[in-house]
Structure formats: C-alpha cells, structure tokens
Image (tube, rainbow, N blue to C red; front, top):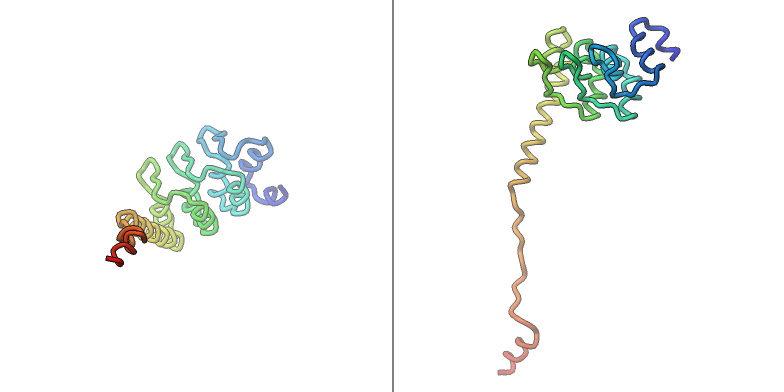
Length: 158
C-alpha cells in the first residue's frame, strides 16, 4: 500500500483494495473492476497480483472496454504482456467497435499496437494449424492376419 500512496491516480484502486472488494466485482458506476484500474494506471505489479487471484481479464466496463483496452490507451506494454500471457481476448471490441490494437494506434503507442498485431497474427496462425490438424485423420495401418497359427500349420501339412 505504500507504493499506492506515492501515486495520486491510484486512489480508486487503493479504496477498492482496502474495502476488500472482489477482483471481478464492478464496484463503481462505470463498472470498472480493480483489474481495469490497474491496467489503466499501468500498475503491472497490481495487475499480476489480480491475475494470480483469478481476475476476469475480459470483463467489460460501461464503454465495453476490457483491461486490455485500458492498458493500450495508456501505452503500458508491461500490462499488455501480462494480459496476453493470461490469455485475454485481443480481438474484443468496445462499444465503438475498437480493439485494444486500434486504441494503441489512436492514442499514439505504436510499440503497443505492433505488439498486439504480432500476437493477433501468431494466434491466427496457430488456430489455422489447429484447424488443419483437426481435419486430418491419421491413417491407421493394421497388420494383416491370415488366420490362426493352427490354420497356417494345417495348410503347410497339405
């Protein structure tokens, strides 16, 4: 909590944590959870703690923004990395139809936008490869059997 006292922007997060609210509960009128506030403030250390306690990475606020959107808007590559590693949906759109990648470009954070673009492309390639594997049925090769050994021995005697 001492770290939070150094930053006046963290008052909302501090109040939520002190009140003992759930990491997934939308406690304010904007429906922003502690995860939204940590990502939007660029507080990677609090975000990591919340992820370890089971926070919902895809919870959307009244604007339809998930924590990934918030981190992209402030240019926090560290928070974006944590969210992506936690398997946040990178193609989730807010109420304006914007992804986190779109917001990173809009707010002037090209390194964050390029990171999200790379992750999106990697996920697309993996999903295509998985689809190909799902459609390919392995050919099962069976050994031919000509009958029991008794039948074979009888044939040899004749």
